[in-house]
Amino acid sequence: MGEVDPAFIQEPEHRPRISYIEGEGIPVIDLSPLHSPNDVSAFEGLVKEIGNACKEWGFFQVINHGVPLEKRQKIEKTSKRFFAQSLEEKRKVKKTEKLVLGYYDSEYTKNVRDWKEVFDFIIEEPTLFPNSHEPANDKELSGWTNLWPEYPPEFRETCQEYIQEMEKLAFKLMELVALSLGLPADRFHGFFKDQVSYVRLNYYPICPFPHLALGLGRHKDSGAVTILGEDGVPGLEVKRRKNGEWVRVRHIPDAYIINIGDNIKVWSNDEYESVEHRVIVNSEKERYSYPFFLLPALSTVVEPLEELTNEQNPAKYRAYNWGEFISNRNQSNYQKQKVENLQISDFKISE
Image 1: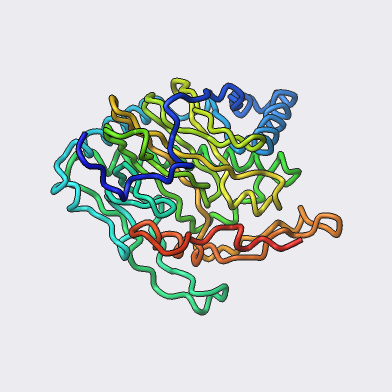
Image 2 (image 1 turned 120 degrees about the vertical axis):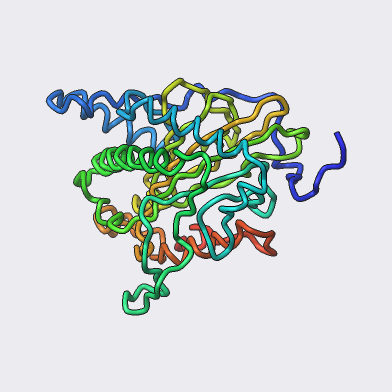
């Protein structure tokens, strides 16, 4: 097998098990009622299902979601063609600490290197980055510009078409989340006026030491919702809230895997949960996935919604600036840090 680069080795307590538990309990939710608005009963049932899934799991799968299968097949095919190139070609669009979009092959999660390659592209290129909560202190933003490779030639068009489909589905999901919390359907829309949402193309190569490394280390997503498409090779694991067990998410053809991020956990004042998940590597098969991360505008101040707090249920988090938060988080992606990066738990108000 050869010598293992210690940068990839997980601490013993975080190493994956060879055997695994398949997550049969992870909800599978049919979004068909979205396409039949006159069926009030079915729509109300859908809203309830979404709420229960957000509260009990923080993860669920959706079917009949309205995303054309053709768009999904194209992004997967194009992604595979891009990653099949030489490192020299891929690194022509390499991201750095100053260029936050593009290709990267040495990312860290919780100070351990991930066994993967990625390519990130954003839905809108923002022009301002917040230095503080005061708009007057904003400065021009650099580094948030899409880097498009020359090959495959259809790469840019395919990516842009796909991210538009993801945005539409994400806003439908956010409306369902809002309704499940007893809020107006459009309650969250204002946070995404100048969104920094993006798609990440993931490539997990064959790994000769799958018992020591992870494709993506344990973490929680910091944004609003994540919509994950994958190629059918199993690998995603979710940590169950009730017992801390890692369970494998089973593959359902043409379904999307949805998880709630820290933004919603805070906005809902802990009513809904953001849970840890990770990606296992494979000694026999490559794996590809293409998550969409719905992220608010960089100027957003994230805090529990006023409608969901009161004297009996006071705010459980201090407000934090989203742009500053992800800027801090991004710094730890490129090199090992002496301490763990910023977490929303750092803003939790002591009881």
